[in-house]
Image (cartoon, rainbow, N blue to C red; front, side, top):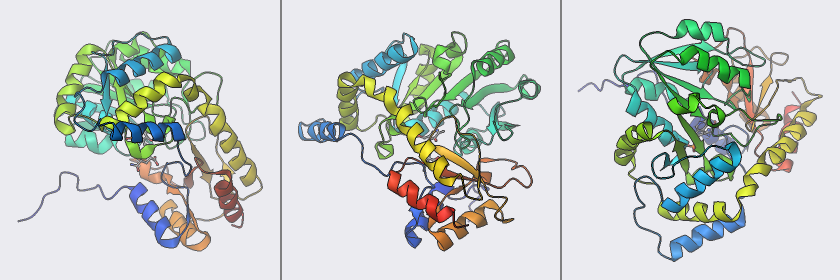
Length: 381
Ligand code: PMP
Ligand code: GLN
């Protein structure tokens, strides 16, 4: 039999590839986005206690009530938005599952989905598996903010969904209030929904963060997705959540109940208790990562890399065109082997990478010593 792939153009993700290469060559891994430092010990203790006390069977499908209440509290405290913890908050196995469920729930064969280019790598395959057709709108360096006239031209009667992501992976750009206003103007008379991927919601370096939670019209059409993995330094817990109006949440839950049914119970219990005890901690995250961003930028300032702006996330883009003409994948492979630093080639996030663009992404969610050594090695080039 010939196996006709549903995703013939999709290989193994760049994160798996680069982390494996980094391990093989013993390189400093600044490729895949995860911290190399430990989460808060109190959170780890709470998880251990939850397991020992017997919180080990299925959780309710939509998430532990205590955690959904805590998430509703976080949204209220941070954005001034009141949400119904029963009907509008769903706990998922990471933001990945949430986004995948949302796309599967909403996109019908032939529906069009507007994505930006570059975009996080899971959106496009999820749209294809649902039978949707993606339309990409270019974001241009160095600020990577949308051209709203071009956006309107991409919309049409078949547009079912728009997927946005600010702070943005991989570019570190952040939208401003006027971007959300322009988005609303463009889609308000369209019959389409919104996924707002806000996993880096607490990692922004400007005065205020833009969020769909704060936009009183967009949020009525939106599934806003986030991840405790980013906000509490525990990407391996795969603990995410979605906030959406009741009707949209109900559709999302129809998929979620058959994909995972529920998310690891003791981890939910631990996070619920942690949020109750320490909700203010999430608000110090931006300062913590700003220091790391500034350290990395200062250390690389004298190198031949050109640093692009970074307003949010824990990713810094570097332009290496003064160093090499190689394509970005070859350049990243050589960096691992020759100087022992793993990075991500930015072209993988594009449907159509701009000709001649030479960018790599570094993750600065690392110990200061890791950043110092990585910068020392990169500065040799
Ligand atoms: N969206 C973006 C923009 C991401 O960078 C990531 C992963 N880091 C995810 C979604 C997935 O998050 P999670 O690990 O919680 O599934
Ligand atoms: N989101 C992480 C990144 O951009 C990786 C997540 C993954 O490995 N799937 O690096």
